[in-house]
Length: 165
Image 1 (spheres, rainbow, N blue to C red):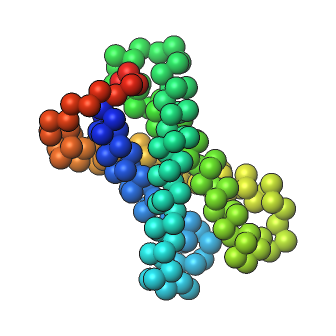
Image 2: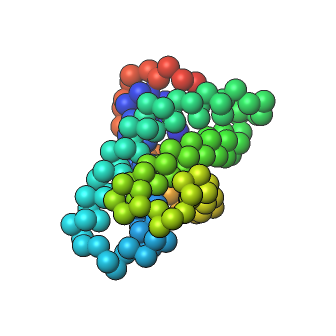
Image 3: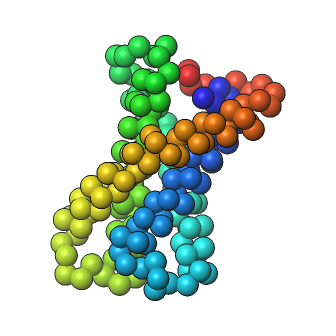
């Protein structure tokens, strides 16, 4: 787990990269666009989604999720509870925000094919959450924590972090 602002930045960057990569391809596949758009369009999509997701994670969702997760009454000395709590609130916040981003992108590019906006949003949130939460817990989270501890945490970074981990 990150303990400084710099480590927190790198950890968020790594986590965001992994989740954006998987979630972008999941949504392209889900909407039947994977074989119909070019590699250039996929790269542009990945870059735009990454920038949006990282800014949301850094400034809005991350701080709110941490505040909620650490305010709950559970044993914070048990790392697994902290990881599960943070993962749940981070994934929930990011799914709510990024599903809205995806819906608006879809709406402005080709419409919703007659589907009501609210129904489309909640359907998208549901589909994204059932993929993102297990993805975070089983694949991206463990891989990022391993890589973070191996390549970032081992470095001597001394800037203190305001939040308690």
